[in-house]
Each structure stands twice: as structure tokens, then as C-alpha cells.
Image (cartoon, rainbow, N blue to C red; front, top):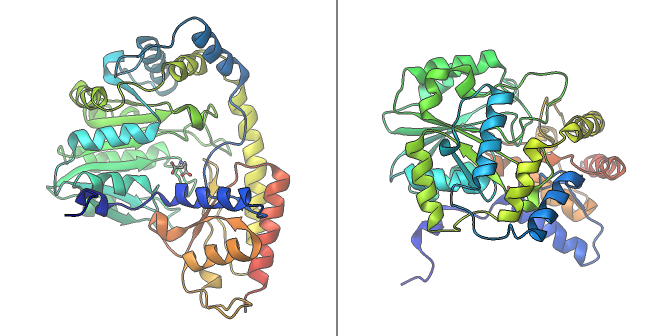
Length: 400
Ligand code: GLU
């Protein structure tokens, strides 16, 4: 009898985490590696947020919290959802978890049964399909091409829905493409969803604040209030507040779902770190000016990376409107030969070649469900990005 449970055979290690770990190990061993694989802001957590955690530690706010999260944090989240998104959630309709990932884990474990279908527009963040699979669900992929700006059309959504569809996952601005749905585009998807009452939507809004070129942010339950009762609005502190290591995310949705998730939470981690939760209260209620400052820097880096990648032989890169990723096509290098004589057959071959020859770690498009592309996170210092893009240009120029 195998020791490891069969359910684990349905999933693979997170490619983003795995490649990041590998590049960190290479670096620690003295390798000249630039890690563009993981998506996390390089900025420090703002000082006032760090201070709030220190105060919590020093004033004994260090005990367990309720599985749903601190009441103070859930109230701050409800106020944020009202203020910024026009959504009326009560604190009882909010669950706090150890990062957005744990909220998705809890939501799917609480609701997905064997054979339930989860619609995942591709390219997607690596974790969505695997958490569906882990729980016996069947991911149904909808291919969203570069020509369509990596976005799903209402017709594609309609065609993907079956009586077995339980969830649709939306992520805008998107990891890995940086594309974002406009309010009108979400309206089109909402019209399809209104016709299918069995379908719930998990809308991952974690890149909400990281937007460029003046684009508007839209979230499903606000665009179509009739879908409020079957939407899980997901968000977190990792990206907007540079708090990846603090592990705080949240979901807001109907009580029936939130109660089920909290029950599961009570039997797993009890609650996310109380100290991190107090820091998160300050993040929402305190000064927000770092967001605009950081976005300005991100936008400059985006422009630099897009321009330099478009100068690399065989690559084409669209200009994304949000998040801190670019998702260039490497169609032009497929079929070419490396100086060592190996033919680049896939985007994975290409990222391995870049890592081995130039020490640049990126993630292959196959991991996100759309090839031949690769993902770069540009949440790194400008001079490092410049160096990385020069290395990529050199790697491309060496192919024949
Ligand atoms: N969201 C980040 C990424 O895609 C964090 C790593 C992960 O959890 O996958 O790189």
C-alpha cells in the first residue's frame, strides 16, 4: 500500500514556487542567478504596518483568533469592500485566511465534490486547477489567446458551462498575463452567469490596486448585484501592501459558504497569525499612499521590460495593464538550436536554456496552461531588470 494518499497524485508542485526555490538554491550556492519566477513585490512592508505588528506583540495581542479572523479585521475588510468596491458584506460574511491561497483551498475543499467542474480561463495562476483537482473536481480550461488579450469572451464561457459546473474562477488583473477585464467585459460574462444559477464565481481580486494607464477596476458582484449571492470575492494583503510573508488573505461571500470555510479552518490552522491580522487592520485603515508610489515604479519597470523583450530576437511582448507580470510569446524561438546543439521544442526548453546559460529564472507558459509563452515578474529593482533583459536578449541572439 503506498504511503502517500492517492489524492496527492492529482496535483503537482506549484511551478512558481518550485522554480523560485530552485533559483534561490542556485544563488545560495554562489550562482549568478536573477530570479524572475516568483510574483512578490520587492518593496518593504510599509513602516506603519510593521509598527502595528510590533504594538500587537508588545501589548499581548498574541493569542488565538477565531477561525473567521479578528472581528476588528473583518470589520475593516467590510468597510474596505464598501468604500472601494461598493459591496455590502457584513463581518459574518468574511473569512480571513493565511493568504489568498488558503481561502481558495478552504472554499474548494468545502464545496467541490467528485466530478464537479471548475471553469478556469487559461492562462491561469497555477494553483486554481490543482486545488480543484485535489478535491476531486475537474478543471475545465478555456483558452484565451494573446489576440483576445488573454481574456475569455461570453461565448466561450457559455460553451464551457455544463450542468456539472460548480465554480468559475476569474482573476483580474491577471496573474500571469497582467490583462484586466473592463466593467463592460465583466457585464458580458455576468449576463451568461445569470442564466446558470448552479454556477458560483470565485473572483480573485488580489491585484486590484496594481493597475496602469488609468484603467478602471471592476469586480463581478458589484457589476451584477444579482450574482452577489453566489460570488466569493477574494483579496489579500500580499501584493498591495507588500506583505507576502505575513500570510493574510480574505474571502467575502454568502454566509453558507463562509460558515463552511470557517468550520474547516477550525480543524486546520485555527486562525492565521494574530499578529499579522493586527498588521492587516492597520494596512486597511491606515495611510494608503505607498500604493500610488509603488505603482509608478512598477509602471516604469513594465515599460522597460516590455521594450527590452520586444527587442529580443524571437520574442513578442504585449503591454499589460495590471499586476507585475509580463507574458511574452516565445513562438519565434521554437525550433531554433542552442549553441550546445539542443533544439528548443517547448517554452519549458526555452526557460531551462535561459536559466542554464544566462542565469535568468522565469516560468514556462505550459505551467499556466498556454504555450509557447513564459512569465516574468518585474517586481525587482530596475538595474536588475535591465541586466535580466540584456541576458534574455543575449540568450535569444545565440539561437540559430
Ligand atoms: N502569486 C505568486 C506567484 O504567482 C506567488 C507564488 C505562488 O504562490 O504561486 O508567483
